[in-house]
Length: 193
Image (cartoon, rainbow, N blue to C red; front, top):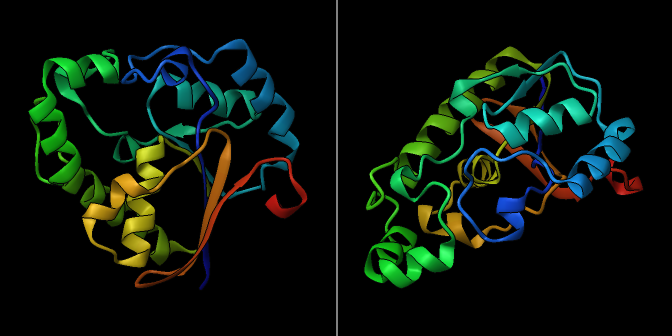
């Protein structure tokens, strides 16, 4: 039984444009418009999910999806860094930020580690692989990274080396234990079908 999982990164927000850790802000006007324009290019699915964040829920809505929030698809909890500018954290806590970016087990912010996120998302993907069918999920970029790390079975150090642009789709197909990966194509392009 083949499973198809299409992961869609959320549209832009003011936090994303300012390199600020997500603080629950809404999509900006351009992001909402781009998501609305891409709605016709989202594949039909038996299961439609979203990360619980505001930007993922609003992106799903703008795409015309009636998505169910899935706690296991929540983004990376950055603890006390939430809402702070990346540059400010780097200036105030350069060693802590460097450790966090280099060590997948580090949690200097008091949130969750990259390893914890990757393991949680990997377990979710393997459950999907046992059920078959198509799932579409609007998820945080770090969830897409975790899926790629899991599918390719690469070291966790690769996590921060993966860029996930807004409103791109990444697809994995196969079944639990054996996945194929199609990397982030923009929604609304001929190659995105």
